[in-house]
Image 1 (tube, rainbow, N blue to C red):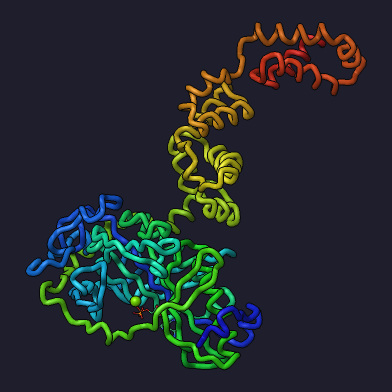
Image 2 (cartoon, helix red, strand yellow; image 1 turned 90 degrees about the vertical axis):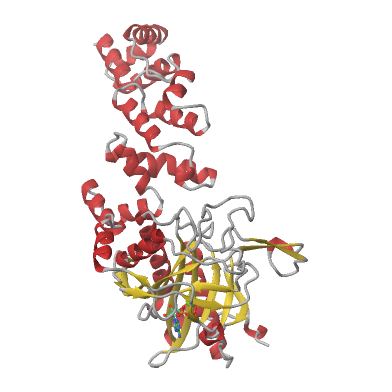
Length: 502
Ligand code: ADP
Ligand code: MG
């Protein structure tokens, strides 16, 4: 039994004194193609179970796969963005396995002839330094269907009494991106893992080939971790942790495995090559199944599919369509906006970059756009426990608020109320301003009347002011603001008072 050490963790600093971590990341990205990888069924998410199916995805006898050209093109695109070599000819293989959610009982994948190989991705760590992660290969395959386990706790197979099969996902194109062993990260291994997955996610999103949502499974990460004694040449035995649903969890899963394995090794336990499951609830991993070795899958070339040819002209055509890559774009924007490294990092980490860019595109100044998203709106998102991008206000609406401030129609305070109204679903910015009566009172007559009234009601203050105590004017301004229900421009009120008392 291995349960004896399940809860034993070694102190992180001690782990690093004794061991060096080695990692390997396997990331599956679901491509957002119209149709499946080998058949014409829709590849869209969210349809009625088993409605996006066809003889191929149901594994019916005699059904023949046809390769999705877009899927190949996008695989090449990802490969190029990862600085990989693109194979002129690659091949599909059958990975044989009992898949209750893949009726063919094999998965079409690529084995010894992947479409892309030998690349790298330079990732930026929290302190701004770069770490190069080498890519072993990026290959094409198809997704399996989805099982829903019922009767047990929280949808898990454990304790379930029955399972439902949905083949909608079976056959959706997947790209699996596998790193070479990542060594030399040392104490920053968990951070490197997170930064790598984060960079990869941004990359595929910017290529427009996947929405790469870890929470919805369109991007899935398995993290392999092993330890070797400091100074030792050979790698230790790795475990492969699955079920990782967020960037934070990637980091935690690596850290946990390092601490768990170290405690086990020191206690004389042997690390076994196995899959482990990450538990979101407490940040631990638990034992899964012993890992199959490659030979268990009895890979062989799929006789139904010819080699995939990627003529150089086509590869170059695809290369020419690569967009500005996220880190290049980020560096450009940072210098355009004149931000310090940490200001830029905070804004990126807050998920505000694209929102600010869109707000600027909608006409706002960069400084104003940035200030709204990283200050007031960030606070609102925080209060509501949602991501910035999930707030029910659009960049265009924020730009409209900024414009109204610029025109002097809203003060900052009124603008925040306008934003509150939009967030509360009261309508568009101008509708909220009209409905809540927020517009700054520009009517000099109305403000002047309010000023006159406030002065008449406070002869004592006027006297003090005339005697040289200019600070008391604040009380008058306050009364005018109150009388105009906050809609007067304080600067204008101040000027009027000064003029009248001069
Ligand atoms: P599998 O099919 O078993 O998942 P892959 O080759 O697809 O194997 O992925 C294994 C990943 O683990 C790769 O990223 C590889 O670089 C990495 N890896 C290999 N050996 C080790 C090791 N001893 N420790 C940590 N990572 C490793
Ligand atoms: Mg693998």
